[in-house]
Image (cartoon, rainbow, N blue to C red; front, side, top):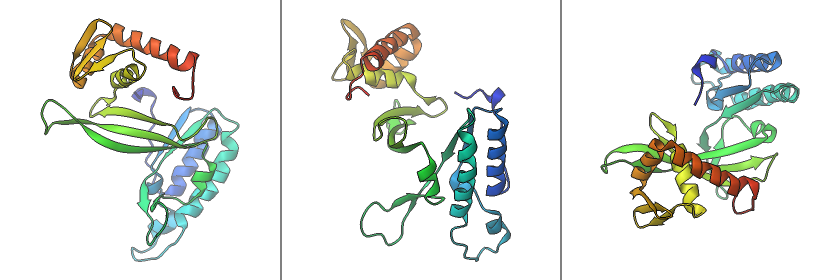
Length: 231
């Protein structure tokens, strides 16, 4: 999770102000990570000063293009990572291809070293059918300048808890045959872990030593002798 004692929160009034703050923090070298949440909310000053009915085309795209030209130059000389969270919009009147696009123009797509597409796959149901306790999330690498792109991962995010480490361990352990699944039962060799996915995840959460053992075995399989299928 996030150490809130070392978290700085800024709520600027305009997009220009937000990106100026980001540039200042990068130049200072005093922070390791900057998160801009979100690109869609970076409202240019001219749009704020204008009337509600004014037509102002490309203001946000021009703002992002200029800011990224400045930020990229100094990022390479610092140890700071900047993360932009964006939103999906739909292109109007598109006949061929995907109608989905992201806000803020194309500059962010070109300048970014890594782009992740995060989507909800399904809901995670608890003890009863109307008890939704989380979401299953699929993350796809759509651009990567430092490693092979287009890989995917699925994560369980529980409401109020965040990403479930134990669910990720269980899924990987089944994939690499460290845990065997038969119907609704889960076993590790001759030892039964329990019945039902959520019960086994809860069991791994309580049995930290077992979860750590599985994680260490998985790290050896995946990272010490990696193959194209295991990554």
